[in-house]
Image (spheres, rainbow, N blue to C red):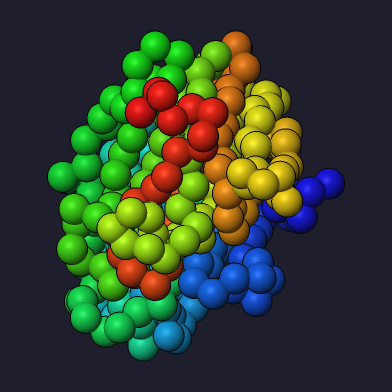
Length: 264
């Protein structure tokens, strides 16, 4: 199995704990909790800022010395409603207590202490179409470049209909040469509908030094350290993924793969 493909090692508790050390890069961390009613999760943010995304279910949160109440109303991610999220700056802590079965994503990258804790969504997040034809997909932007409440993080949800391509036309963001291109590490948290389905993700460089084609299942995580990274959902299987990106600057600039440059 590819080193870029992570399968869930458990069904409850902290399912993933991707760090710069485990991924072999510098900026992005990604964690995921699956909790049952009454179960809890607690973390210090340390040197990272964090966006907590309620992928599914409901949980009560305390963070940065405040009670944020119960977040979440999407019981199935494929409802496609806007997510409830919470931004927590570096040097703080957070705690969650599940009120229902829930899935909480922990998106992290270096913080600079420039922003206060705050709720994100569901207000202000609108499902938006991107692409056309069989490249159509639908986006919930949580914290992309237009939102200025983060120091490093770029976070978004993508829903790809069955039979469609996504993160396509193929593109890369693996050089620090702004404004032409920016260096951004990236994780994908994948879900499939139905859960027995599968999708594909390719990660490849122009020179062929990296070329991995991965079959992703419900709950898998993929790592994109460099190169182009398109996804495909076969007919009959709908694909969701949560993207986390970060690098030395908070801008998303990319370069298309040569073979698809004419599509931009």
